[in-house]
Image (cartoon, rainbow, N blue to C red):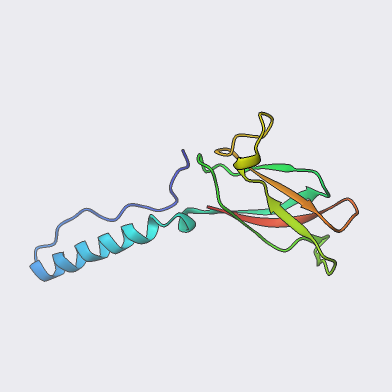
Length: 123
């Protein structure tokens, strides 16, 4: 399981009743924010995708991930030609599909050539 990057809130009690109520309220709000899945996501930079070949990318979340993919680029420059980067879902997965709790599979195509780089935010 992925280790949290957030520290738990301090579990001390304050002597003043009003201050303690405010502290508890802050602790609850911090807990709510840190439990939102996108907050605990990871940015995977400069992932190379070969044209028309599915690419399994390890994400390290310990559960199936949702991905947001940046526009493809070649050697630091953006692409102007039409392109497609698809996250392959588990509905059409085969026995050879990597475990979705460990990998996210991307399929890129539409521009020809050798491939492109993308950044992926997984959560």
